[in-house]
Length: 61
Image (cartoon, rainbow, N blue to C red):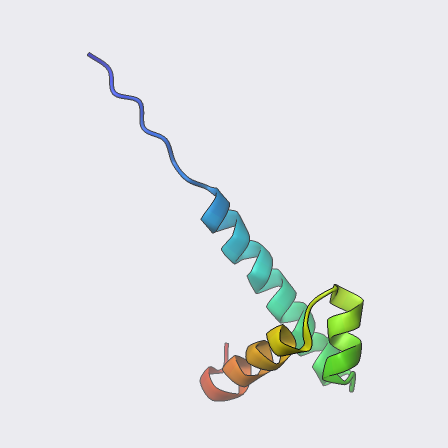
């Protein structure tokens, strides 16, 4: 009897995508863009940008 294993890749793709967005946020901040402009450019909320920058400042990631 063969077993079928399903792998949920949606969470993996989401994490990779948000990591790419977080890197973009950090790069835009490095170029002097304000949080509001970064949020608007990436179609995010200011809260998401603020949390990403806070994580970067505190943890370095």
